[in-house]
Image (cartoon, rainbow, N blue to C red):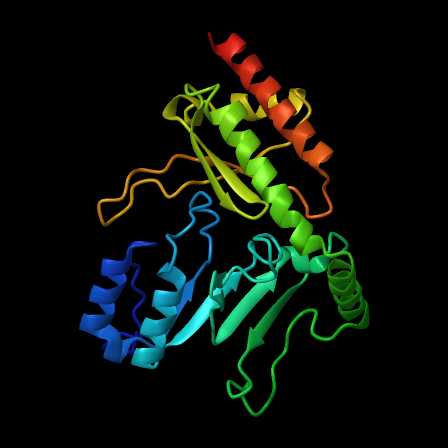
Length: 267
């Protein structure tokens, strides 16, 4: 937001709540400089916004003259298309998008800032650690061309639907003592833990590793404003888009085996 006596102000509003966003812009829209948003909240626990929410936020930004900055570091090429800022009506316009992680194609670590042409850098230019390095550019270009040529994004949609179905049927439904719900978009999924597991996260992780699958936990949003429920740590399940259905089945089977082992040990 525009400067107050002691500098710029950062405000957080409940993610996914239409009324909260509209009310905030109605009260402060003339002072909002930019909005930073994740198409799917990652560290908060793979939180997927309701249909239409991202486009509404984009509209509010446009109407108020604020810049819309999309943090696509986690979502790039993971939601069934290159960018998570999209819905059934097509791409959702942003002013700045930040991508990374998958952009390195598993070969190197890199990131990229994509911005509207009229948002130029300062006259003296800009400096970044991996700016225009030949190897980095070659890897990104080759990877993107391969994804396009092999139709991998289209295939990942079917893979994501398959993963979502199996996670719900073979983890959440079978082990209600361990899991609250599964949610996600494309191949980017999260299975939220119950408090019972959250209190013994280290032991749970070790059991999963011994069952043949390395798991990563997103911290979870915890206590949220706007009357939203508490979110416990969430197990991220996001297979690479080169995965086959057999690969996905193996992942879920090992997660199920680890879940059974954890219940036996903690009984």
